[in-house]
Length: 107
Image (tube, rainbow, N blue to C red; front, side, top):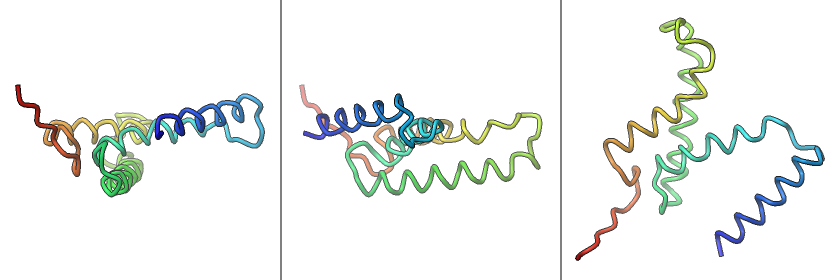
């Protein structure tokens, strides 16, 4: 059911974006940041997704603020890459996310 709802909402969003019916062109950036937020929190945990979204938002804003002072040679778009760096660091430590549950398969 959730896959059907996600597909329907994606179809509506794509239609609105294609017709330019009051939808901002930069809206696709939200989808690019939502993926690391969900994976950081854990794919099967709703509170984890909220915590992951907060963590990604804090990291992205801090990198955007302090990067110019401490590492100006990296360029201006490091803040947009920082959610994926956070996601990789969390997945190295906890492969199922912060609040995700590990699946145990017995053979």
